[in-house]
Amino acid sequence: LPPRLPLKRENDEPLRVNILFKHIQDLLSGETTVIAETGDSWFNCQKLRLPENCGYEFQMQYGSIGWSVGATLGYAQASRERRVIACIGDGSSQ
Image 1 (cartoon, one colour):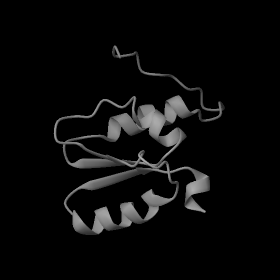
Image 2: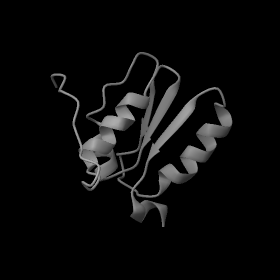
Image 3: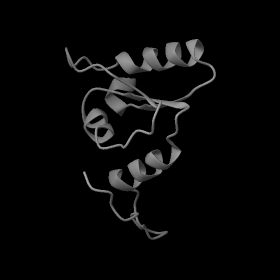
């Protein structure tokens, strides 16, 4: 995808998914890892431009929801030098 202009949001405007993922994009570096849950989170994370050495974990083979909650905790404990960004939907958290 070609780079886009930064999205703008008015202070009184509701937060939209595309604005949220613009902010997530700004957080990414070579010292971060993105964990993308199955479903909408995965589809939106696919649009992120990952910097060199940025990790990316997803599980789409079986499409099972909820795996990323435990995976985030385990990844954060095993790789304490990395910042873990988890994109998880509310259904998966339940």
